[in-house]
Length: 324
View 1 (cartoon, rainbow, N blue to C red):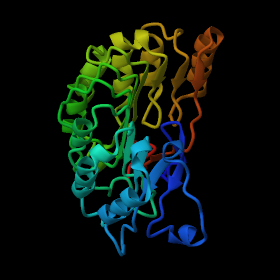
View 2: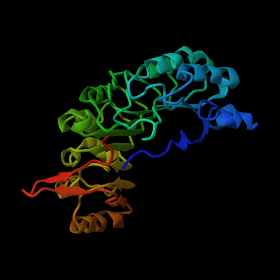
View 3: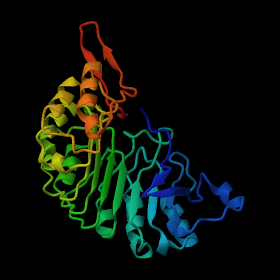
View 4: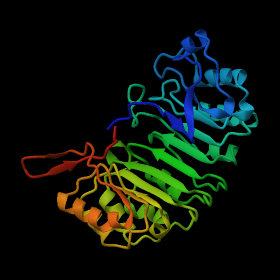
């Protein structure tokens, strides 16, 4: 699986591409901009041969749009994203905070594979966005290389999504140590050690306990090569009892992990259990359906494109959905 398209919707709003290096023809054609708060504005430049920096494109946006009503911003590609982090991008957003009083959602790094593979996207410390925007309700980040997330407290954040092919353990620990009392939706793509995902199941214990996440209803710990271990710990994790959605998809999930999850604490209170992209046997798929679906739980068991390779000596290689 690769990321083959940009976000089409964000924070419940359709995405509108601001006129930039990719879209100036739209302006020349006389396209009329939408109302500032009716869309999620996407701002990007060519990651390889841009004739302007992302910060310059953002400056044009600030001049062209009544930003007092803007509710959602998407940061697409910045110049040389495969080689440079978003420090200047974040700095520009922070500097403009007084001009964005209605901003409630930011996505940092909306790039598809042709622009920059997810493991090539350089990130940095993304928490200055939370400090600068205390009313922010949603933060999304794509890319794990150089990603930092020192522990923070934020009173209003309701949704946090971090998409990586390998999430550094230090960043995982930072999120886990953060106090996010309003957070309802947490989605972490932990990834693989081949691309920097060095978190261990033990380091996820604060998520399993959920003490710093009292409002959490949607927990996704996915796209992981340690998916079996994650599921084994979720089997007795206190946080599960108050979830509506549990998502352990996109990883190397085998019968061992799914059996541990199924034979642990009851899951019949869930609205959805997402296991798509998995390495489960037909017998266990049937058992999961027969146990949970009669209770009204939506169970996603689609194996998707999960493929394994077996060597002559019997070694079996299994892969997460999104790595490189």
